[in-house]
Amino acid sequence: MSAMADPEVLLADRVFGESARWHDDRLWFADWATQEIIAVGLDGKSEVVTEVPSRLPICFDWLPDGTLLVVAGRDARLLRLEPDGSLVTYAELSDVATMWNEIVVDGRGNAYVNGASPDFERGDFPPGIVALVTPDRTVRQVADGILFGNGMAVTPDNSTLIVAESHGHRLTAFGIEADGSLSGRRVWADLGEAPPDGICLDADGCVWYADVPHKCCARVREGGEILTTLQHDRACYSCVTGGPDGHTLFAVAAKYRGFQDLPGPGRTGQVITWPI
Image (cartoon, rainbow, N blue to C red; front, side, top):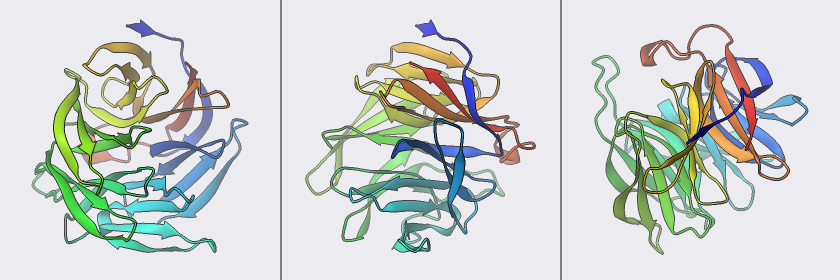
């Protein structure tokens, strides 16, 4: 396992970033506190792409044709960004679960979204699910027993879905069937004490995951071997590889005082980068 130098700060003065994505030569993320999806270039210049009328969680990904889909987590809806900048309902998710978190779209236009039906007042977080939204916008549950589902990734050949289970301290893989169903559940990597948050796959088939309590991003090989750990001075929530040659790791980070105090104190949110 190797550790590397401190990161560079690409963007500061944010509140609570999540859902890091590299798209169209920019880093995109959702600021859950300000309800914005933001894109920032390598020069540090940023723009608000859209404002989402929903409380956290807010996560997003793109259909193969470039259409942006947005999870309005507390509203249990999947939204679509229209050419005129408006957000319209793409799929209703409330019949399957009451709150939704992360999304990933495969190369066939299948959107996988993880969610649950928590009781925040009692602090009860039952095992969650993964739902499939097909290109015709049919919604169905395709997995259960997910221990606080967070980041997800699909392999480039569309054969495997990897889900970060934060409370399970593991990455779990499923085979993707021709109709989008999931099968062959297995532990892709046991992460010991690490609760993975946002994840991405790199060009070598390894997973980078953000680790909130340990204030780092780590690279793990299938089977659980940790190859690299990148430490920061505050919690890391999501990460993605990108840049002109794919050799930059971007992460969104902020100070953290516990789940019940999200989005956290002040404007401590950052977009940070490491060369990898």
